[in-house]
Length: 101
Image 1 (cartoon, rainbow, N blue to C red):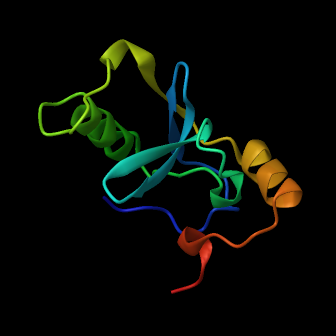
Image 2 (image 1 turned 180 degrees about the vertical axis):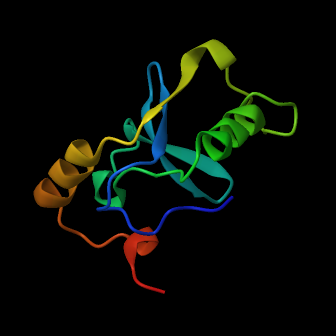
């Protein structure tokens, strides 16, 4: 799944779970969600297109996912640059996903 590495530019999409929060990315085959992950330093995951965000949702609700989620709990919304900037300011640890390639 591709990702927009220019996190401070406008545009893009993010995925929100009704109770877990905003999708931050995944590691060791687990999805991490802000604020429930307790790891705000990772910031918010930005999808360049709505189609890419929908692909994540399609996976998270499928039988291929180890613990499928309910489609009704997930929604796509415009990337919240202000929330991302707030997290960066309050938790200034660098994110591996934001390092220049």
